[in-house]
Amino acid sequence: ALAGINGGYFVVYPDQGVPGDPAGLSLVDGQLVSESIGARGCLILSPKLEIGPVSSSLTLVAEDGARRRLNGRNRSLDLVRSGQTHDVTQHTRDEIVEYLPVFGPQTPGLGALEAVIEAGRVTVLRPPGGPIPSGGSVLAADAQARPWLEQHCGVGSHPKVDWSLSRPAERLIAGGPILLHTGRIDLHPDCRLPLTHDADLRDPFELRELLRHYIGSIVADLGQWHDIRHH
Image (spheres, rainbow, N blue to C red):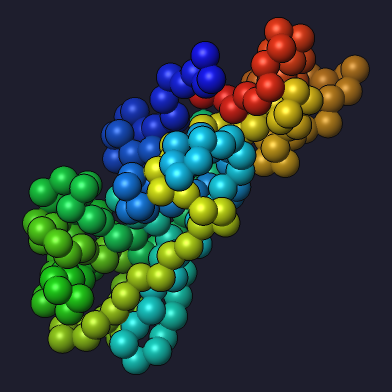
C-alpha cells in the first residue's frame, strides 16, 4: 500500500467542543473547513500525495480596514481540541469563529454575538444561535471579542476572510504529531518532551510521550517511511 489512514482526531463529547469537529486542519476541495493547530502533520491528498506539516493563517478584514485574527472555522468558541497538548481540550478567550454552510443548518448558539453574512454583506447582528445562510457565513464572537465585531462588522458592511496555507494543497486531512519522517524519528516540537531515565511514568503526559518515542522506533524498524499519529 502507498499509504494507510484511519481518520484524524476529532471532538467526541460536547464538553470538549462541537462533536465531530476535526482537531486541526481540514481542507475539502479547496475550502478550508477547519483551521490548523500549529503545524501538525497532515496527509495531503491533492494536488500531490504528500505527508508533512501544514499550518493555516486566517485574518478577518473589516471594510473600514480593521484587521484581527479569525480564530477558527466551524468549531466551538473558546475551546480548542489538541491546542497546547495533543488530544486535550484547551480553554481560550477573545475569539471570533466563522461558521460555513458545511457546518450544518444552524450555528451552535455559543458566544455573545453573531454577524450574518450574505452575498458578502452583513445583513443582521443577532444573539447566538440561528440559521447559516446558503452561500454565506456567520461570524460568532465571545464576550471579549463582541465589541470588535460590533464596531467593525456592523449591518451593511462587507467584511472578508483572508486565509492561506504554509504549502499548496487542495484536499488534506490532519493527523496528530509527526513521529517518523523519511524513516527517522522526528517528534514534532508540539509533543516533544525530554526523555530521561528518571521520567515519572505515573505522569500520563510523560508516559504518553515516552510511548510515542518507542512507537516511532518500532514503525521505523518495520520499514515505515512516514508516520503521523492517528487514532
